[in-house]
Length: 208
Image 1 (cartoon, rainbow, N blue to C red):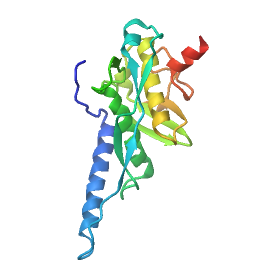
Image 2: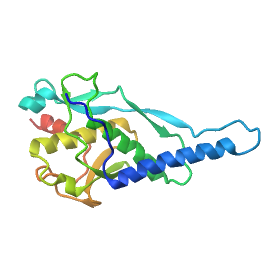
Image 3: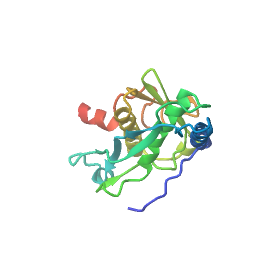
Image 4: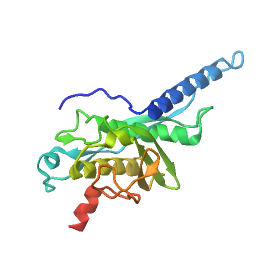
């Protein structure tokens, strides 16, 4: 499988990521320099393990569900601030973690065999926020035009929903937005008017 370097797409995501890094560095420097002879303090970060969901390559190639559909991978963690850095809102700090989890789906880990992903860097995100248990995944509409068929949309939604719900305790459901607004569908095939509590792949299996 071709290796791809991961780049965060979408101007809003880039600004948020750079802002967070800058805030952490500035806060760390300020704490380290404050007070003569004081022990240097650093911004504490928490190692956050993720449960990432990729798709079985056999399912991509043949549509056969008998060998499984989504593959869970828990070998990746990200570092998130233990406390919100000065100059950021809680929402911006949380959004950094959520977005970081989804960008890891862009590339399949080398240790994961016979797996693929339909969540790629071509789908830009404005941001991902969470309120009252609902994660709002705000996608860039221009990137969704002529982007795929019903299978790609089904798996794309499922990978994101399962990753967010199973990686973050505060997330119970996922609502997709396009350019900040609710939408009937992302790619013209699957209903996205209501939040998802599980991936569409799982729903389809249950309904069979």
